[in-house]
Length: 364
Ligand SMILES: Nc1ncnc2c1ncn2[C@@H]1O[C@H](COP(=O)(O)OP(=O)(O)OP(=O)(O)O)[C@@H](O)[C@H]1O
Ligand SMILES: [Mg+2]
Image (cartoon, rainbow, N blue to C red):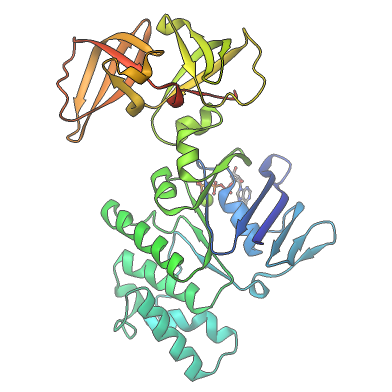
């Protein structure tokens, strides 16, 4: 059963801005789902509608079968009746209070006894690794520690669902990377349901069970990190998640059980594509094909006999574990990632091959 149901959500700001344009998704119990997309695509607005901080123009929001918002029936529960934990980008720490007082703030408002509050605070601080810092003034902590305080506050509240809005983006790169893993592990350990907002694709990949990619208030694609990366549905998703090559082509014949031939004039070649072809594609129609740089292999390997390309290395940048190369093939400059121990130089002529299962036809 779905823990969170968002159905046909629409939110406008004035007559100009359609911030959320008919968004529907569900989040299962204990699932970690991320809303991912560029600035202004409607992530925060969607989250704020779930929290009850915005009233949507249309749509329903249910949590554990309870109707939180229903525009048709005029229902919109206030935030304090929703029992959801929220963690924001700004830590929202009260500067004049100690760490413990900050964590206690939400539960005191729920009317818990002193002993209960103190027990919950100690437990929450322990969970986020801040035991012993309870008496410290909250502003005398590092950014990472302050973010843990706001997480402890959300956890102490015993929320049904945790909502996160770019909680790590104010931390430095190293700490951010560590906190990603820690936070995702903690959420899993506690079996919490989480909806997480970020514009950082690496963060979404590392933390999520499922990623919902948004653009201009609309969902573009929904899937686990592996599927989102390897089978993007359109050029926006392919390009937003990771680095990729996007080739313009024309649909050709289907090769029985193996894929669809696509004529790519810029490569002066035909490419056999095995992904993104489970739909009617008229022969001769224009389409786009995406291939990730790391799936283009140097040399002519046996299984890839179909997609063999000749090229010349125009640029090769050494990154330690890999080479980031540009390889001219026909009139197209392919981005190719090669293992760091490969022997490769600018100017070199190379043969490349691509497995058809790595060639994805896009829907746009
Ligand atoms: N209170 C508001 N009044 C008017 N317009 C708003 C308001 N809040 C958001 N918007 C607009 O709605 C759209 C979606 O904004 P939202 O904050 O949801 O984007 P976001 O995906 O969270 O972006 P970011 O990554 O920059 O945080 C934007 O065009 C934004 O300018
Ligand atoms: Mg936002």
